Image (cartoon, rainbow, N blue to C red; front, side, top):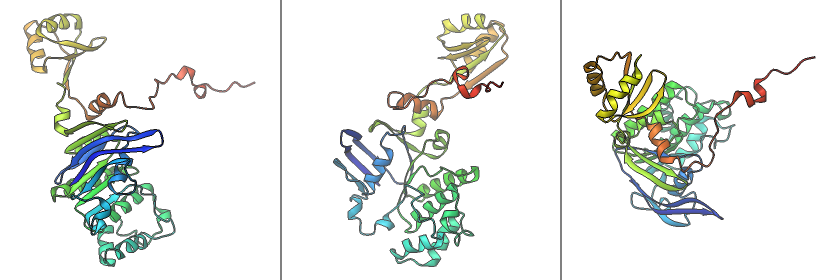
Length: 315
């Protein structure tokens, strides 16, 4: 189990992490979400003893990381897959780590096989793709068969097969009773992987909630397409509907379920061409939670103002 208690980190005048308190429990995949610069990586580094907090503390199995009797057997972590000497082979890198644990070549080959690099062990890491480096980082995290696994953006650079593999892998670790904390910017992937979510913004905790609860936080909207949209709206409004959006013959209705919309349309003999329920996505829930915590917000793209969109004049 990971316990973060009133954790705060300042870099000069910058408040990177602001009084964070949360618990990551065993048997679950806990997703750690937030905009760039929200303090996720800094928090993970403090949990692992790589950065010292300004105040507060982070505990693993009731102890700070530095006080664990066998840290690599207690915690496996991937923070930066690029931090491997490029001239080392995958086997050489893992064997040097395994030696500190009293493990030999058999364990090294076992974790390479687990992450799909069994045939690449003799290759130099400098020849690896980003996805292969990510897999190597996961292999290093597994060497000590740890009870706690911390992964920072583990799907970066992975192909579709790799994304499915890491998702299945993390859920399998949690099913064994391990504590799994993973950060990611891929909302669709977190919706399929994480049982629980921690959302931070500007260093503060915005949400600490089961994934299913967050996704149920808003009723689904109903998309209605009809050749008589005005008549449809006149029927639905008195029944308690609210109009979220309209585009031509298409209405996006909130406050009524698709079954009620269908019955009302039938009762008034209104023709419907489409009737689709739009359920809340993790992406939309995340954007609602973090809308006031984004430091860098892009503007809508206007092709007419983009000089690269116009051909150069020729003479």
